[in-house]
Length: 244
Ligand SMILES: [Zn+2]
Image (cartoon, rainbow, N blue to C red; front, side, top):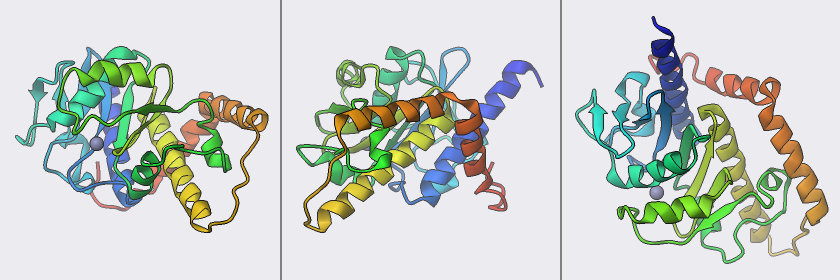
């Protein structure tokens, strides 16, 4: 297998694993939402529109170009146009972003409905201190002119709350985008659990929040940390049948 082919194979395996893990963790939403990955040559992989995340396999991913034109579709199902509106905007604006992961979870949507958004309440949430973008709701993301606003709102961040809609993370690899999403999801769940008690909330100081955010950044940049965490996640799929 050529270097390019083996590189593509690895990206496909990572991306299919991310779909399966999102389903395993209950972060999927029927056939909706999307995870995209960049391939060499400005091509992108996306889920076929009609498969549940638990059904996605490395060889069933659809290849599209930067305009969303289907280049290869082993399923014949095509892609969700709204999915690629969001993802192409961010891949195009951010050459460092090789994976974009989007969810509609109850906890993520609930936090997206709060005026104050995500609070610096717990260790997970501090990964996103001063590093979390917000994008106002514009209806289902079908209009191509929303792409510029999505990219402008994300800026240089790697996580964004889509108001009234859901969560989005991105990263230089599928694994890093997945691990970031898991923390964002848990941050949302923990905030809702704390708020549900009705007790006064104890916020972390901005100084401590910045300190912890930088600790997360150092960890994410370390292959010893985040790469082994992603491989450990992938092993959760061992024995799950012909997953990949
Ligand atoms: Zn969505």
